[in-house]
Image (cartoon, rainbow, N blue to C red; front, side, top):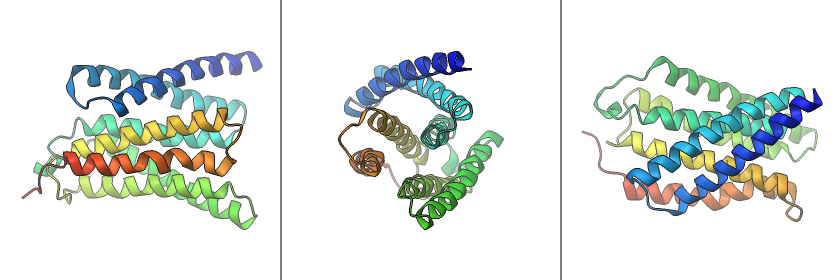
Length: 216
């Protein structure tokens, strides 16, 4: 069992390093174009492996950290990829079954995270803040899914904005994992939340920049 865990952990670290590197390149580089697309695919597949391996390791050696990162990253990556197939949502396109399954997946875990977070805080465990923050962010995206899938978005290119938001959200999860694992100086709760605080403003900036027009 230990050999299996160590093997998965090694592959997890390799994939995570690739994800962090390619994610950073796309974060600071020019958006759109062939290079952005290729690097984005490498980021997507490497981080999907990270998500899957997180689940496996959290089962072999129960770990809140791995489980939260796995759930959040899986939803962000998968929904970001799916939105590229939903370019006509504002024109009446209907989401596929997989889109609804991903949304309800995050909905259930988002609620669970909030409950666990409140329970931790009641028992004076500050880690509950992490559960609540990630659960709240996840549910915020779930709410957006419901609006978008029901044709209630007022943005013509909502598919692009959703893709940007979720890929960046997956990058935040990647950066958070790296900081939490390697941090020796910053207090634990701050290390968990710092990437979100730093990168989140970029999401708002890009949404304002790439929003095209209001759908009629």
